[in-house]
Length: 434
Ligand SMILES: *Cc1c(COP(=O)(O)O)cnc(C)c1O
Image 1 (cartoon, rainbow, N blue to C red):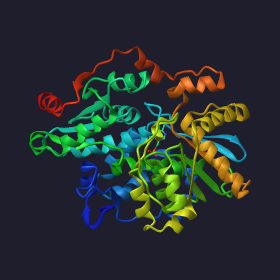
Image 2 (spheres, rainbow, N blue to C red):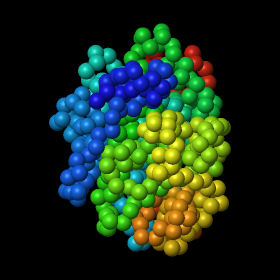
Image 3 (cartoon, rainbow, N blue to C red):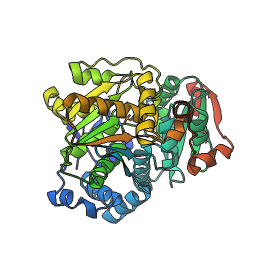
Image 4 (tube, protein in one colour):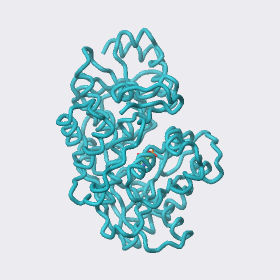
């Protein structure tokens, strides 16, 4: 399987190149030259496949021999070492829990798979690979945990001092070994500019082997299709149409779902559920793309004003908005409606949902009410564990949330970070001397 850039379809690269480079030279995102159609027998007998077996079958198509089968099977086993259960709330409503990984958010699926594939490719290089990533919180911890202990790889995570939550900072700064947390006296945008500057610094690149692990890496997208297929497997009545609502920001998660649909997964519709950052809702409704500065909301992992993966969705549908509208709906919800969603899910179903999931719930409910569909498998994708947002969730539900052990352990560990000013020279010296 070859990969092309969404901005130029005549320049094909291998999977390895797509993973190591992350972003194409022309600024486009890598896409597989074709989306494999899963054998009908696999869909019909999906009950016989575990989540990891589904993952292995799908990744074989996309990686196409660039990683030997046995090795690939090990990668999937190690990367996806937790489950993605579908929890039924009522006849028509289920929640797909994607927070059972080490950092309690769905980003663990992508980050761990990417880390393991990069580790495989790094083993074939004669120098150490240095990964540089800027984070506003969740991505950094998933990436740090994914690469923790990886052979031949060092990871540097830049985060803005005082601008991530207490728990997020603990998750970022309490790992040792090959992970270095760099606390930048500045904003997230400053962190991102420093990373970008490093990537165009030819001197630095010739001295150290530099790679990125940002969210548009194709190796983060592929594993996100596994759990949509695994969700379908868990449906009791597969004759009822499935409608899946995905709390969306940078649109990676929903893109993976749409790819699963193209692979043959029977899903009636995907909903891109947005908070007040509604660039995607506007795109689907009015076919206008107007990227803008993000605004802060309760579902902060979706505070994205210029969603990168839109380019992939447009590519997947050959820029045909009518075709997109057949498969995709989108709606946008305020913080107040998010809180109402949390409250309603708790009161109706005794289920504690996080603010991102609550946006997904509102969008699904709205869609089903408008379409007058009632015999349906409605699925809300729950992208994070509510304990990550305990202040708001406890306020709304008046119920204390038990913090899972894997999050609780890092609270007691000592924070270790290197503080720098927002100065590129300081970062460069640090990278050259560590
Ligand atoms: C990153 C994130 C999202 C948004 O996912 P995209 O793939 O960027 O659309 C939603 N919820 C949580 C909890 C996240 O961490």
